[in-house]
Amino acid sequence: MKKLRTYLPLATLVVLMIVGTFLSDKFLTYSNLMNLLQFSAESALIAVGMTLVILTGGIDLSVGSIVALAAVVSANTQQLGLAGILVIVLLIGAVIGAINGIVLTKFRVEPFMATLATMAIFRAVTLWYTNGGPILGNITPAFSYLANGSVLGIPLPAIYVVVVFIIGYVVLNHTPFGRHVLAIGGGEETSRLFGINVKRVKIWVYIISGVLAALAGMLITSRIGMGEPRSGYQFELVAIAVVIVGGTSLTGGRGTIGGSFIGLLIFAVVMNIMNLLNISSFVQPIVRGLIIILAALAISRMLKSKASTGIA
Image (cartoon, rainbow, N blue to C red; front, side, top):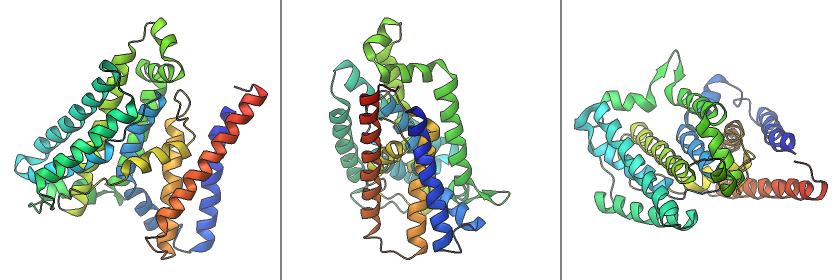
């Protein structure tokens, strides 16, 4: 069952790559593949954080609002320099993530409701901060380079995608914190009996999710050259879909960072193919929704098979 959960997304990605190659002669070009990774950077950051959250049995609906707030604040604080902006953005993500974690652990509010509330609150804060309009500040060359620069011909955002997933993989699979995350998703009471501080781990998971979402917001501002208060719209849905398509269970305890990476590539390849074929932007969300439904059906069938055969 574990192998099926792992190999089904990978097989799906391989099929999509083959289809893309047949549908467009531009698909397998170096520039197109780099663009595919480059424009997945923000989703990659959020997906890694969302994977950790979902593995604990939680959910984080506030990431899109964190993206928007970090985006406009980073545009409005260019005078602080790159280091100053980074500190403020990290604080925004950490504080909102901590609020999420504290509300759901200390006050025992369900993750869905806790993060739904902060999603609404901080989206409103962002619109209030900007009066609903974009911040057209003087973006410095150093800040712009974050999302538009390259190293040895490789776009920096493409490097970010690989680096963030490698770090996520190491944290989840080779640190006590990662083992605690998986243990909590498998059973909170059992984890407590083994001495794991469940509340502390959950708070840190939401802090990590918030920080990564804030960094994604900063990258968006670097890319487009302004602070857009409507940035991050539906990013939480895309991140959840990426994680689920990658084979992570919404009930927690089962899933991998590698699976989320494959899930991200599946969505990126599908969107890329549709762009190459000039498919309407109004149709693309429909396709994205169909992918989610198909993934949910596949996972449901796997779980039913597991229940009927007793395979772990």
